[in-house]
Picture 1: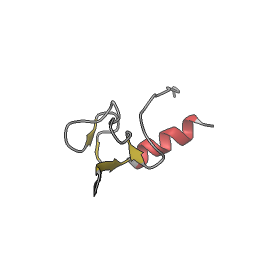
Picture 2: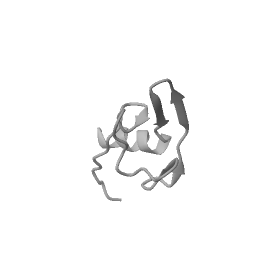
Picture 3: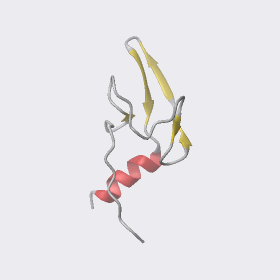
Length: 64
């Protein structure tokens, strides 16, 4: 097993920041890194995507 470090643009629950999406985002709702579809949430000021559980788990594992 190997340990890798990822640098992602994300908040604790959302992919990317308000004006900048994560570099692993695909056009639409996909994630190139974890090959999953993210859930889109619409708000008055725009929209954001929820992070995939695999992404959150990888961040927690890297923090150990």
